[in-house]
Image (cartoon, rainbow, N blue to C red):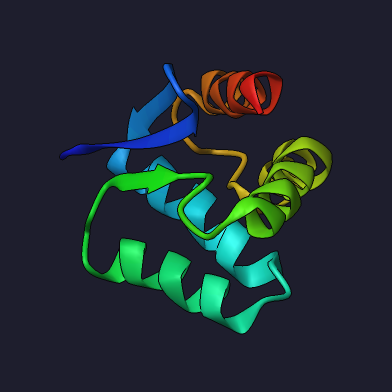
Length: 102
């Protein structure tokens, strides 16, 4: 399975297994208020693009995406990801790494 990459800022990238990348982008799509940004994020997942740059949708959207990552990502993952997920704690740590980079 392919990995996905989120470009957090120039030169700062976060990489994860394809399923986790898709889950993370879907998390953002479900929570961002701007319907165009949400549609663009869903397209990244549906087209299997495997790449998101936080600045793809302009500075205001980038700011809102960063806020979502920083304030909701890990707690939502902890609630939604199954307890029996293999390497669950490592997955949560990897998401925490994204939050730290954002």
